[in-house]
Image (cartoon, rainbow, N blue to C red; front, side, top):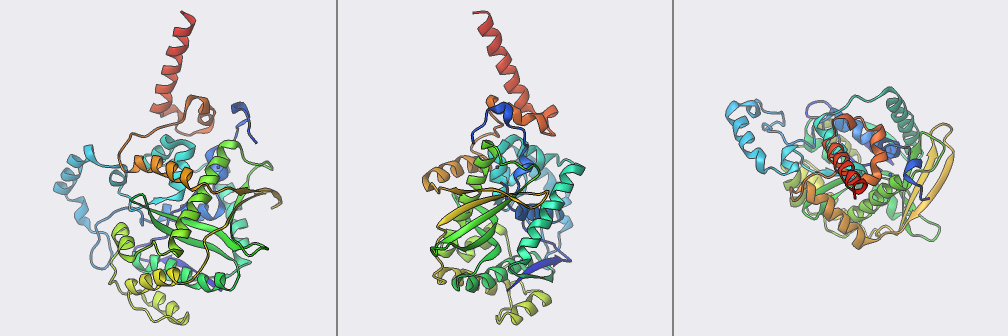
Length: 387
């Protein structure tokens, strides 16, 4: 099996997607949120930094960004709307990624600062990202080859994701394993996108999701990081199970992502589809074929959620955890985190007992949430002393 990688030349659109995170006392928590991003999601984040797929932009018929968006009148209209905009509208986002939700679990305020004031990646983090990506790529190549296909529009890029899904379905049907399975669907009115690291079958024939986490230090993650990991793989299961159960509908997909269904596929994308035995001409053709194949594939829902931790230094396995899927609990958490994106509540930072997270946060010196919490804690402490 071959996995297609989009090589964007006009309107590049690789997708963004997802992040990850026993019990220790707060003073023992020394890792920051970066330490527990999975390798597959690191690649997606790097792609997103170079592309604008998540951002809402005015596009012409051929997919290029229109200069009309810079018109003074329109900018004034946008400014007048800003007081009632939801975060999705404020940041011009078409969808939320699993990475976003995991970032909210770690510190929602930090996530917002990263969107508003992207910080330069420190050399040590860049090195860790490179090493993690290398380990991830080696594991991916164990399962399939990677073919580069030039894309010209956003529709081309999403068509590639769909073609990859179409190629992976028969592998799973035959009892094989796949890596980098794209997942996306609507949850609680929000479109969510992610990438499953690996899907395969257990010795008992159960469909198993395996998420690889590489660690900079030869130690297992902290309790706070594991909490984010649990939410990450639970979200993947929700999305995948919905896709194979017929929940994903083409029109909902198109509406959320603002795609043009009748857009002709680029020549290289169409050529690759033909080589795969598919007769498709437009993005709608590929999308509808993908939704039908998922619905009638008779693929099982995911039975097992497994986290694997390995040390970047030598690739050795540090340990693994099997996650218990608690649907009601995860849906309750999703509702809370999505309420921010819907504009139903203000951004929230960490609780005072998690203040240790601030020690390595690049936004600690400007964090309004931290200043407010610190001031409130000092006031309460002063009152206690005077009682």
